[in-house]
Amino acid sequence: MHAHRPLAIPLISATLVGLTVFWAFPENLGFWRSVAIVSGWAGCGLLAASLLLMIREARLAAWLGGLESMYRWHHRLGVSAYLALLVHPLALATAGWSEAPALAWAMLAPWQQGWPVWLGWAALLCLMTGLALALSPAMPYARWRGLHNLLALAIVLALGHLLLLGLDYLLLWSPLLALALILWRFLRADLGLAATPHVVARVDHPSAEVVEVRLQPLAHPLAARPGQFVLAAFLDGPGFRGCGEYHPYTISAVAPDGEIALGIKALGDCTRHLQTVVPGVAVRIEGPFGDFLNERPAGPELWLAGGIGITPFLGVLRSGPLPHPVRLIYLHRNEHDATFRDEIATLAKIQPRLAPDIIACGDRLPDLAALLPAAPDLAGHECYLCGPPGLLAAAVRLLRQRSVSPARIHFEHFDFR
Amino acid sequence: MMRKLFLLGTGAFWIAVLMVWAGARWLPSVPEQALPPTEKRFTLEEIARHASPEDCWMAIERTVYDLTPYLPEHPSRSGIVDPWCGKEATEAYRTKMKGRPHSPEADHLLTQYRVGALEEP
Image (cartoon, rainbow over all chains, first blue to last red; front, side, top):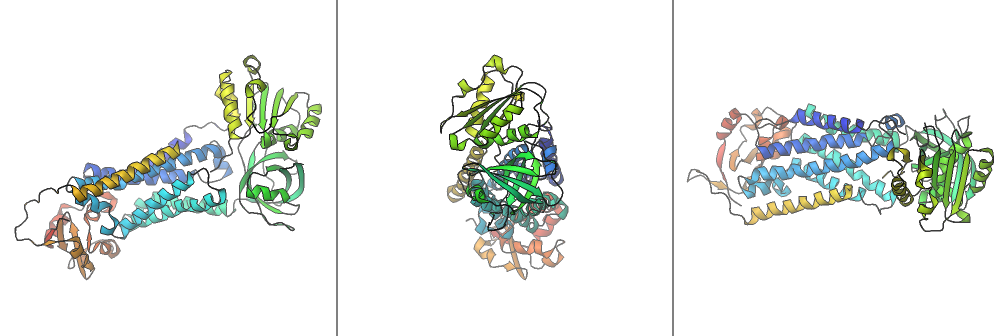
């Protein structure tokens, strides 16, 4: 699937942390004071590495193994940085403890200190609050995004802490790099300078809660392939005010002239509003990202789609004849929810290698044990899965039980928090 | 997994901070080392009254210094040293540029400005 460079992110992170700590490594200091300095700078290096993975550039994402992998490491490195930075003040206090507990407390108590320590505390508390909110799964997306800015504020305050401590300017390269990466992300991704302009050319409603929009490029067309996804922000148009937020959508068709189609299900406030989108609305597109369903090995395939998870498979079916036999299991809730069902039935007539099973399973998780092929029928199959997280987890578990190796199970989460 | 690590780390951090506070509040201090019996003692509150470059006292390693006459000679930018006037500045003194402590020469220089000892809280 993705370019397999499993060591790329750990190596980049280790380099950033190693260089930062090497540059600042203390000499002739006591053990705990040294621990304090190393943990502080290690935290800075880890933060810079974490922020590098927040950059949303298609080429960088392709090189580092995809946005999902980058975001997973962004979380890991961010939390590791936080833990290292928690050690910093505690190690300073421990160094003071050997002389007098009161001195240890004087290191921590902000009212016994000045601006350098106040800013350090403010940065740590911002990081603590920002991470607590960022790791909160139940928070609505818009509020989550807004409060995520606390983490950027923590970097600015930390830089102030270091400047007021009078540290050498050269030593500040890692926090300055972190700040530069935040600016890059803000300007290129959040303000959309890296996005290409499109316009909604056509709107179809294949089911009650799904809209499929066809987007015409206004500048150069994207080099997109079916199965990839883009981040799209819908802006204003005739009688329509877009929410302007970037969300991931799978490409359900790519035309030779560069027109792309996106299948959008009403899952939140923004996507619900998009069900009423009209031709003429301006759209900004970042990407394409991911390579789900690209460069597939030769051999039979099993496709499992849940709900709107049918879109990447539909993109491939629409793009031309299948090179290998495909068994498609498409699960949907009910008749109203069976998006593209008629089109898949039509495609099956012109795609002789396609064997579709379109199954209505209500609101419950279906009996996958009965629906998925038995172990002997899965031998030699590549399995591609797209759907809600619960369905994916259950399907992966079952396929593993049926002796399908992890290398033959392909899926994407589309969870970009 | 990340959420659990965050919660564990945060909980452990605040417990450690509480322990340091409790230690400072209730544990007996290390006996005072040989200080001249007549040496004057100052509290952090008294030191805080000398918090400007024109009247700059600092507590460094439990000794109090009046650094007012020395400030113009200090090699770094005034913005680096001045904020520590009137404060417990041990940490700043020990972690100069690149995390290194001041030189033995600086330690020797400092003794000229000694005015007393830091009172136990």
